[in-house]
Each structure stands twice: as C-alpha cells, then as structure tokens.
Image 1 (cartoon, each protein chain N blue to C red):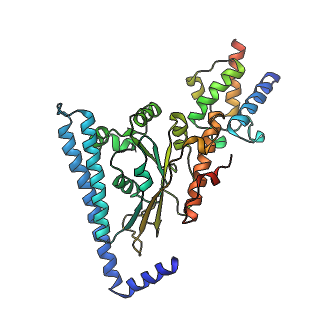
Image 2 (image 1 turned 90 degrees about the vertical axis):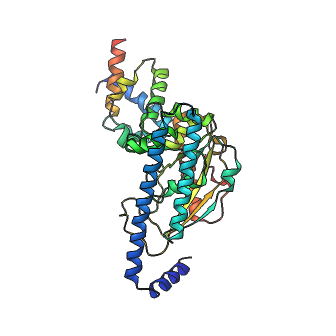
Image 3 (image 1 turned 30 degrees about the horizontal axis):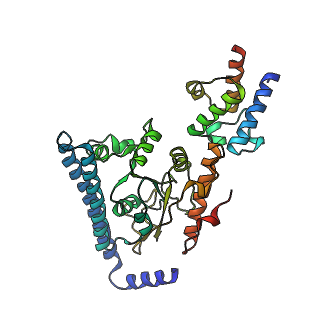
Length: 84
Length: 282
C-alpha cells in the first residue's frame, strides 16, 4: 500500500471511529463493512455524506454498492482523487 | 412464581390421563391453525372482491379491513383462551391514552405476538414480508390494509407518511423471534426509522411463560402448562428523552438501539416499571 492510500486509510479510520464508535484497531483493509464492522446500508448513506464533506470527493451510491471491505473504500477514493 | 407453576402442572398431570390430554390439545391446536388460515382466506376473498368497487374510497376500505383484522385477531385469541391453549393479560392503558402517530415496538417471544398486538390495536400499520405481499389472498388484504412491504425501496418515506397521517407502525426491533436463551438482541432498524422520521416510541413488553411457539418450534410441540401472555405498555418515549439528538445520526441509531435494549432488559428482569430517566446512559 503506497503513501497516498495510507493517508486515505488514516482518514477513513478517523471517520469510522468517530461516526460508528468503532475500535481503531478494527479498521484494517481486510475488514468487511457489513460482517465485521456492523455498518448497514443506512449507515453507508451517512458515511457517504460525511466522506464527501471531509474529502471533497463525490462518490455515488452505485459506486459504493460494489464496496465490501475497508480496502475497497480506500481504492475507490484513491481512484477518484487520481482522476480529479 | 416457578413453584406455583410447578404445583399447577403436577395437579394437571395427576388428574386426567396425560396422553389423552396431550392428544386433545394437539387436535384443538391444529383446528385453531386451520381456523386462522380459513379466516385469513375468507377476509382475503371478501376484500379481493371488494377491491374493484370504486364507490368506497381506499381510505374507507383501509379502515374496514383493519377493523376486520383487529376483530379477527381478538376473537381468535378468545378462542385460544376458551380452549385453554393460552392465557393472556393486557395492561395497555398507556398505549390507548396517547394520541396516535408513533412507532409501537415490542419484544418478540412467540409466533402469536403480532396477533395479540393487533387484538389490542384497532388501527395499526405493519410491515409484511414479500411472501405475504405477493400471495393472491393475503396480498390483497395487506395492500388494502395499507401495510408496508418490508422490501420496499421507499420504506422510510412511506413509513414517515403513515406516521404523519396519524397511524401507528408496529416494529419488532429483534427482527425475529427471541432465541431459546431469552437474550434480547435488538437490530437497528427500529431506531433507524425513529431517528429518520423523528417519531416517538411506544414500548410494549410481552412476557410469555412458559415460552411457547418459539422460532424453530414445531407447531405440535405444545408446552405442558398453559402459556400465559402478559402485554404491558410503558410511557411514550420521546427521542429527546432517550438520546442526544445533536450527535451524528449513526451515533443516534446506535445509542437509541442500546437504550431500547436496556429498557427491555430491565423491564423483563423486574416486575415494577423502571422510570425512563434511570436508563439514560449517554
């Protein structure tokens, strides 16, 4: 994982810990959102709003549907900010 | 309490031949299942025939069918009580005293919880699964009763509209019946909805002793003693009493779920109602 992804991961971790009261140690790239972190589709909507605010990168609900793990979240954001 | 129940059971066992009693109860129970199914189908056919009738407004049809459902459930549990298959006791004055337009929640120990709740509520909106929604007979009933299919995309806006129109919506926060271990595990769905539509919550505590018609129980597996159901409604909970509404919503969902789970755990472990202020953890 390169430096850029590391920094995105750090940001994602910060948001998830704050928003969903999770343990920072749980937020690893392999962690699955639904099964391991108990984040449901309603939470995902709130998460997207928050990520959009803090990162200025817009991600659509359909893009987010493909996301299964924390690693996927990081990849999506890395891909989007590369395009921007 | 357990001692008295045991002595009652012993008395029953020593009276008539036990096997015969058991056989009779299973026979009556199966007859009741048939009765319930037949009733549902008859109401379904009646309202199916009524559905193209245009001079009765859909709102009127909805009131009529909910009245039918309510009376049907009430008479059904009376029949169950008559045959000593269940006993029940309702203490739901607080639910009838408040104005409508709130979410009714209840724990879910048995198969007939929804029947009991419909028997004490004249006009209540339920969520139905797709198997019920798509069925030829029950589908017509569910649609015209204005129930909400639980697979609907627009679930939250639909529910919000119903609450605003002054209907009560029933949700079991456990999502399914309580497991054998009697441990309550609330899912976040009820809290998600309450926070999203800013609705007050009317908690109803259902107690069933001995446990009967649990998830996975076979219908003919009837407990020895007559199960006694108690429905007890609490005070209407405004969200502000339960959680900090200024927090981000995902936190509100979680705090409210935790609050409600604690509420039920305390209510089920003690006979005296706990004042809501003592439950506030956040």
